[in-house]
Image (cartoon, rainbow, N blue to C red; front, side):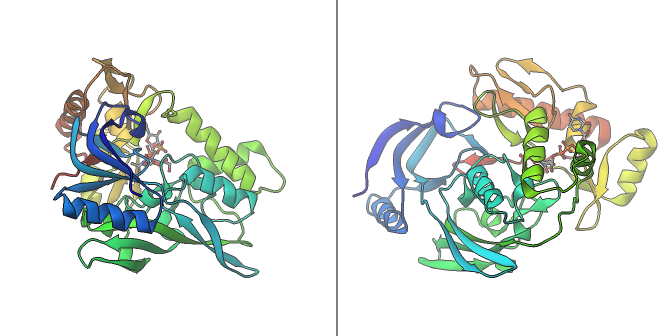
Length: 342
Ligand code: EPU
């Protein structure tokens, strides 16, 4: 039976910790629950929106219609051989706990994505990534309800159209409701480091044989040092994407700011460290009216508990403007508005 709560405050379900009242709210524990909730929404002519771990959302104070909180659980091994394992994970499973499970089993592929907040179902939406790995590197398929075709569909890796913090799920907003994700992990790959900071960190440990657990622990330590734990300091991870600019603009900027940080991007251009740009506009550690910039990582905006989403968005606009004024680079916000705005 579908259980609907009216006027539910989802302050505890968004890691930025803003008060937000969902007009109607229900927990989705299975694909069957999802179908029932969609029928209910249709019957009562309600708009609906999907809430996952709430770690990458900017919630409005009032959320009309029906909010679906995705809690489909389950971890299963679908196929296994000497080299690889194929696993299916319910959308409601916690991402970090999945990473821990993979490391305990010695399955390689997602260990550098430890401590990314949120649930598995949201991981393909923004193609989560950290320290040289992105979800797209291990994802085989996504199962989702297609709200347009009105059926469950399976999208393979290429159909997900992954790009940097982007996917078909983000681009065709509201079309797909993800219920499970299949990943292929490896049993016997040599450990290599694609991200210099992690490589340097591991080097300093002078370990004889580096294990997946060592990599996992190193990532947890690096992240805990630089990024705030949302349980202690309300935040939504990186608030801005790292902008991709042309090689010529980057060269020009290097002339004026020789220490600017940028890396060649997979698509043509240079991916510039937005944290560096914001830091060099003097924002690091800024705090006013309950919203601010994390003192150890300028890419993360924080909320100390007595502010509104409007004030946070004003701060984001002020940061964007000052970065543009100084570097002529346009920043783009990473977390998604909830409910989404088109
Ligand atoms: N930097 C500064 N000042 C700052 C922050 C960063 O000068 O305040 C410089 C750093 O010194 C470094 C460069 O900027 O040279 C890049 O910083 P960092 O290595 O910390 O990574 P990032 O680009 O800020 C990205 C992801 C993170 C991910 C890390 C590690 C985006 C938007 N962010 O951050 O993802 O954990 O790389 O791979 O791509 C997230 O998406 O929520 C997130 C935390």
